[in-house]
Image (cartoon, rainbow, N blue to C red; front, side, top):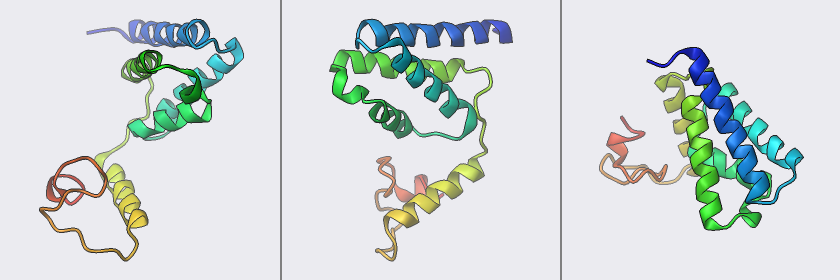
Length: 135
């Protein structure tokens, strides 16, 4: 099992590698690259997040307009690897997550049709409602 020190080193190494990739491949300034990595760290450490939060962060920093597909894949890979190596990532309980998911569904479909148990889940996961958010 990896020690906390090794995990923290790995996390910092991934952060540095992501920053370097943004500077060399995406031609971002060091300031902009550091801002993206800092926002990413804050995302992982302060709240429960979804994969589309990373996409939103990429859009916020204008990376979607700059990066080519191969570069985007590399940035996403580094971003997800950083989460896995994050030593103090935000841990959330499933009940809290399910409540936030249910609220998202209600916001997306106020007063709309009632989702049947065997219908596709409206969250877009591709699962049946009964196996996803209706469980």
